Length: 178
Image 1 (tube, one colour):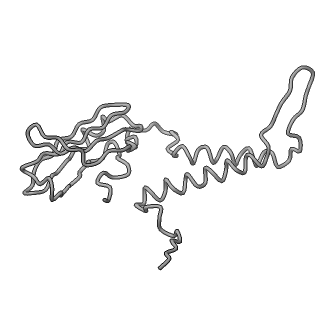
Image 2 (image 1 turned 45 degrees about the horizontal axis):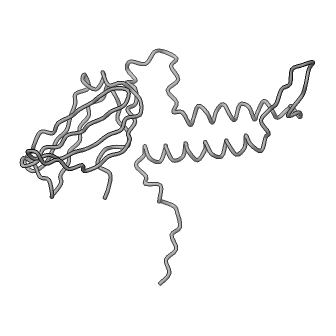
Image 3 (image 1 turned 180 degrees about the vertical axis):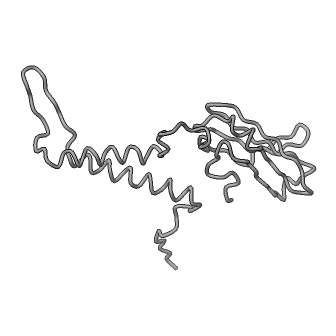
């Protein structure tokens, strides 16, 4: 079943989610989106025929705290409650509220840049370890830095693909035996 909730939510931007679910049609059922993380966000659907509409204005979403949230999308009718989807979703900060000079890069991009800076700085150093008096300095081996760089490059590629709406399966060869 395809994911109902978007892969990320942005604070300070109008939020609108339209859900049509044959098993839980509006107005017989009501949808509720619960987000728990740095803050607590609850949205209740309004019916538009047999379709559910969950929304929040930009003014409302600008108060949402950024961070990683657990979510549960639930359908209810009277005392009956069914969970349609659950998982995690990041709420990105409101760009309009960002201070000048604030680093807006995602975690993977920040770490990747730091690893690459260490690799560049190490290009002219040939010692992994040395001692001066009672102090000793160990440097991360280049092979370990290259593994970390590969890991964060892959993580950044996954995050970028997810934001662009790719499933991660595109481009992967699947072999089928008949």
